[in-house]
Length: 103
Image (tube, rainbow, N blue to C red):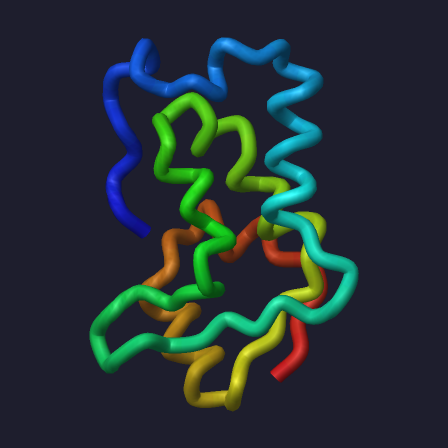
């Protein structure tokens, strides 16, 4: 994931009330089905299309909404090898939030 913007004054999401911002992040980040994490290339971060782009808007949104993605989604991996690769490169803060997995 790319680094979030440092200056919150440039993030228009922060102009919205927190309740609306949280609802928007929920619509973008949480899916009722399995969200498959796919490896782009060896050594690069895992991706789920553009779903995580909202987390790059600014650090505050990243801090508020990142847990939604890991806590609320059923995460899937293409293979056991991809799962183990992800677990070795992902930050422990993220992997500790993962609740439902499919390999």
